Amino acid sequence: MAKLRYFDASNSNARNAAPVASHSEFLRTGKITRTRAHWLAEERRYLTHDEVAERTGRKLETAGARTHQHINGFHHSIQFPKMLFHRTLEDSPHLGYCHVTAARTKFARYEEVSWAFYIANFYADIGDNDNFFQKIDVKYSRMYFAVAIKPGEHTPERMTIDRSVRGNGLLFRTDDPQIAIKNVLLLGARNEQLREIIRQL
Image 1 (cartoon, rainbow, N blue to C red):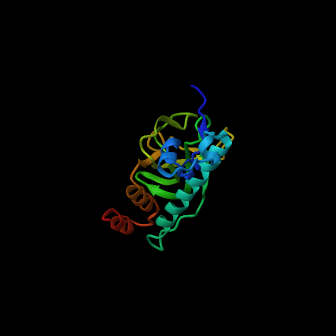
Image 2: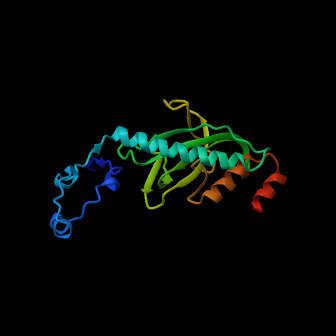
Image 3: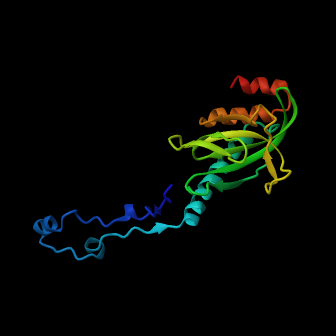
C-alpha cells in the first residue's frame, strides 16, 4: 500500500478575495492586482505522519473527555474514572482510537469482568490475535465499543483483551453515541433496579 500524504488545509479558506481572472478586475476597476497571493500559486504544505497523529490524538481526546462528562453526568451513583489516552494506526495516522474509562462489573453469566470503553474515528471489526482492528470502514465517523480486559501476561502491553468473554472479548459496539452511553451506564450500574431504570431510557 502506498504511503499516505497529508497536506495542511487550514489556510485554504484564508485566501485573498481577489477574483479568479485578473483581467476582469482590471476591466471592472482599472486597477492591476499586485498582491503576492494572486501572482504565486499557493504551495501545499505537507504534514509529517507525526504531525497528523498529534492532531488526530487531540481531537480523539477532546471527544473522549466530552463523552466521559456525559457518562458521569447521568447519576451520582454511577461514576467512572477518567482514563484518557489515545493510539493512532501506524500507516494511517488520521485514524485512531481513544480509551475513555475502565471499570469492573458483573456481566451476563460472568461474575467479575474488567472492561474498558473506547471511541474510534472509524468503524471496524475487533480482530483476533494481535490484529486489534479488521475491516476498517471510514464511512462512519465514530465507533464506540467496550471490551473485556485482563492483565497482559506475555505481551509488552499492560492490559490485553480477555477473549474468554463472549468469544472475542467484545461487550458492545455501535456508531450511535446515545446507545453507547446507555450501554456504559448499564455496565456501571451497581444493582438490577438501576439497570432497569437505564433500560427504560
